[in-house]
Length: 437
Image 1 (cartoon, one colour):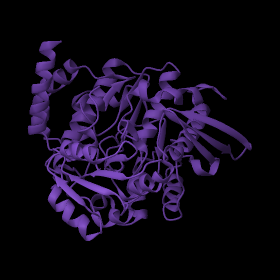
Image 2 (image 1 turned 120 degrees about the vertical axis):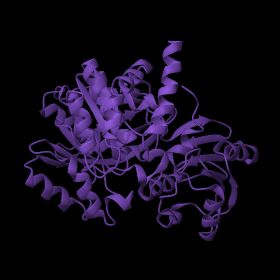
Image 3 (image 1 turned 135 degrees about the horizontal axis):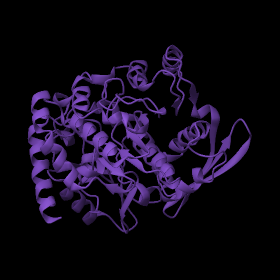
Image 4 (image 1 turned 180 degrees about the vertical axis):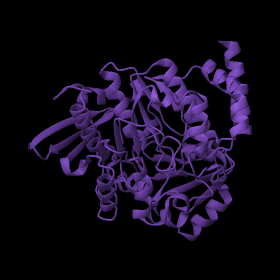
C-alpha cells in the first residue's frame, strides 16, 4: 500500500499540473461542449453504458440528495457507485462505491494506462475525473451509480448518461457567467439533463422556471413530477445528531415522520425531493411499495456514504459549525435559519472565490456578526484583504487572514463558550478546517 500511496500522490500532482481544473483556477477550465468527454469514453469502450444510473442536478441541495439516494440504494443491498464534486480533503472522495473511496491504485492505473489518450484529447480535470469514475464503476460492476452534475446540466460532462431517473433539486443564481443571467435561462441549462422517455423529478416549483421544465419534459416525452406538489413539510425538530421532519403526503393525506442523521435547516427541502424520487424508484421496480428502507436509510446517511461539509459541527464550547453554502440561495437559507440555533455572539470565518458575484450575497450576511475574512489555498480564491474591503462597503466588520486556519484560530481565541463560530462561503474554506477522516 505504501508504494501505491506514493505513486498516487505523484499522480495527483501531475493531474493538477497537467489538467485545467475549475475548482482551482475557475472559468478558464470550463469546456463548453461534451466532445472531450465523449472522446475519452469512446476510447475507454463506453463504460457509461455498463451500469444503471440516477442523474442529479440543481443549484443547491444536489450533493445532499445524491448522498440520500445513494444511502437508500446501499440499504437495499445494491452495489452503489457514488460520484460527487468537488472534494474536500482527498480527491478520491469524488468516486466511491458505498462508503469506500476509489483505491489509489485505480487512480494511478487509469492515468498511467490512458496518458497518451489524455495527451491527445487535452481534456479538463473534471472531464478526466468523470471518465475515471465511469470506468471504475464499470470495472467494479456496480448495480447502480448516483451521479451529481458538476455545474449546469446540458453541457456538464456527466450528461452523457442514459439514466433511469433524472432529478433537478432547484434553481438559483450561481455560475451566471456560464448558465445565464435569469432563472429561466439557468433552468434551461439544468433541463439539459432531461432525457427522452426518462422520468424527471423537480424538487422545488418556481413560477419563473416551472414552464421551462414542463415544456422540455413534454418535448422529450419525459414523465415529469414536482416533489413540492406531492409532499409538504409541516414541521421540523432538531435532534442530537439529526432532525425529525413531519411531512404531509398530499395525495393520501398521510403524515410521515422522517428522521435523518443529516443536520441543517435546509435538509427538509431535500427530503421532499428524496421522497418523490423514492416514489418513482418504486414505480420502476427498484424498491418495493411502502418499503421501510426509504425511511431507515436516512438514519445512516453520514456513515454509509461519508457525507461531510454540510451543517457539520467539528467542535463544541464554542461550537464550530461548517457549511458549504456559497451562493445567494444557499447563504440566504443558511443565515435565515441561524435563528433556530442558540448562541450569544456570532463569529463568521468567511472566504469566497474571485468569480463570485458578491453583490448578490452581501444583503444576506448578518451585520451583527464579527467576521474573519480568509483566503483558501487555491488560485481561484479572492484575496482576504480585498474581500474585507468589499465587505466593509456593505457594512460588515472584521479582520483579514491570509490562511483559513489563521482566521479560525483567531475566532476561537475571541469566542466565548456560548458563542457560535460559523465557517462558510466556499467549499474550499470548509475543506481546510474539516478533521481528517
